[in-house]
Image (tube, rainbow, N blue to C red; front, side):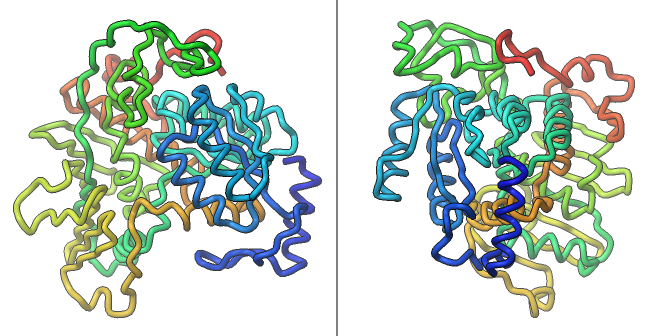
Length: 424
């Protein structure tokens, strides 16, 4: 968004009393076009369509375009948007750069596969767009650094789609940990999916017409390989193939749950200094002595890991514990801990409050809960954990330099090479 228009939106919205209040209070129902945030989508599949519904529900949003390398998907978005606005104005593009070149677009929503998240976000920042990007947000430690650098240099607003930071039961659990009501923190538990070995590439099939599917553009920065329709299935069948998914699949949940543990430990500017994969768990340790256990949801002795759906977290101190999960529930060691702070029930997959915070920050130019710096540290802790699993060894890590100590084989996995034509 040009600075003049952005400044105009911020000032006039404030003057007219149209700015939002934190979480749950939206703008006035009738928002003049000059005060709307014009948004485009990049690669909106099943998860992207959930995000789209939340964005369309916001009265200060005008969704204007979709870029996707798959014709079927861009047509689904076009029809959905046009039906919502009762017009035929949503523009479709097969290449994201066609969206990024439009000066009238203020922000983009990126919900491609993992391989594109970091690179597309960097392209968007350089094009002057604010960014809401689904997780996992990066493919490597170095890409996390590159992402933060690009967003800061361009002075953009960035929100990673780690929506549980704005979901009530997770927020309450984290506030209890940070408040000292659990006593001194001892151990944090993050629910994960275990990493998986890289799969063999699928046999080649005839490549569809480029108008139907731009296969080269679909692969993007990842290594190109023979086309197979199974890769592009909507259920994420591309996962666990070389260069397509982050952290060998660890990031699918860990991007959420480890990020929450970082927040609970007041560690958004750092990361654990030790990683060790053993007995199907990744044991980590922070410099302040707090332990982090990354383990499969539902594992452990009964009463030790309640679960509460996908992406559970559990925080344990020397005076009590709290646990929360995606089904909206929360449990504590002592009911008195929730006496004055019982969260409303909200499913962890609901992005609405997270999206509302992003939009508010687009207007105010404030920092989001999952800004580029928070994202960098959380994602890189996930990458470090995945590298420990990959190498099958205990690793020491310096959160300041974001390098492993005396482990050249681990440092060799800090980055990856983007394919020619998709470099930054």
